[in-house]
Length: 383
Picture 1 (cartoon, helix red, strand yellow):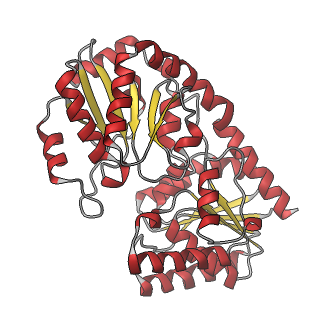
Picture 2 (cartoon, helix red, strand yellow; picture 1 turned 180 degrees about the horizontal axis):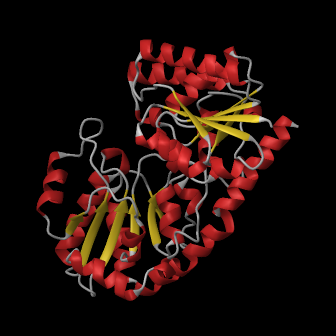
Picture 3 (cartoon, rainbow, N blue to C red; picture 1 turned 45 degrees about the vertical axis):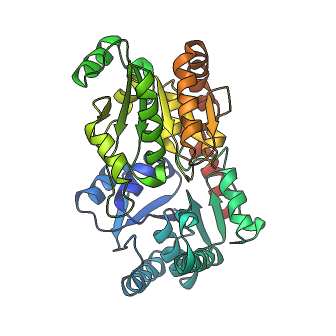
C-alpha cells in the first residue's frame, strides 16, 4: 500500500485541524502522522484516526538548534518509511518537514498554507520569516493555500511561482461537518438552560466571538464597538469563548479592564464544544486581522448565524456581503459598531442572512467534499 506522511507542529493540529481526514485517507493509503510529543494528545490521534503517530519534537518559536535536530529526526523517518507523499500543515512543521523530505528524496512534498502570521511582522523579523517561507516553498513540490485570497498574497509576496500553487476545492483545509454543526441538535429548552446559567435573558441579543482573545483577532476593536453600543442598547450581551495569550499577543489594558468589569460581557473561557454557544447567539462578530480559512466563520454559518467579518482572505470567501453576513474593513471599530448596530436594529435583515447561512456552507464546504477533493489530488500526483 502506498504511504503518506502527514506532519503538523503540535498534536492538536493533527487531531483537530484534520479531524476525520486521516481516517478517511487510510482507506486508500497507509497514513502515518508526525507531531511533537504531546503525551495523551498523540495517543488520542492514534485512537481516533486509527493511524500510527511518530513523535518528533518541534517548537513553534525560532529555535535554530532544536530545529536542526528536528530536521535530522524527520529526515531519518522519511528515509526509513519511504513515503510517496509528505504533506505538512502549520508553519514550523512545513519548513522542517519540507527541508527533510527534499533531503530524503520524497517525490511529492506538499504543504498546506492556512494563514501567514508573518504578514503582521516588521523589520528584521519579517525579513527572516520571509526567507524561511521562501525556503519552505522552494523545498516543496506543491503548495496549497487554503483560500483564493492567500493564493493572491503568496504571489504578491513572490514566495513562489503560480505553477506550484493550487487551491483545493473551494478552499478550507478540512471543511465542516454540517451534521455536527447543526442548530437542530439544540432544543429551545437546551438553549434556555444555558442562557439562564450565563445570566442571559430571553429578550437579550447575543453577539458571540469564538477564538483566541488577542489583538490579532480584533478583540480591541470589538470591545470598543461593544462599549459604545452598550451605552445605547439595553438588552445586549457579548459572549467571548476563548482564552488569552498575554505572553504572545496581549490586549490593550483598557480593553482588558472593560472585559473584567462590564457585566454585559460574558467570558466563558476555552470550550471543547462551541456549538451550544452558537445556538444561544444571534450573530457572530469576527473582526480578525488575518486568517487562513477560519473554521469559526464556517461553524457559525453552519449553525445558522449571520456573521460580521473583516475583509480578509478566507472570511471574504465564506461570507458574501448581504447574503449570509456583512464584510467590514480591518481594524475599523466604527464600521464594526455600525454593522452590529444595523443587525440589532434590522431584525428582518439579520434573520434573512441567518436563513441563508447554513446552505452557503453545505453547498461549498461540506467536509466529505473537501476530503474527496484532496484524495483526487493525491491520486493525480501518485498516478
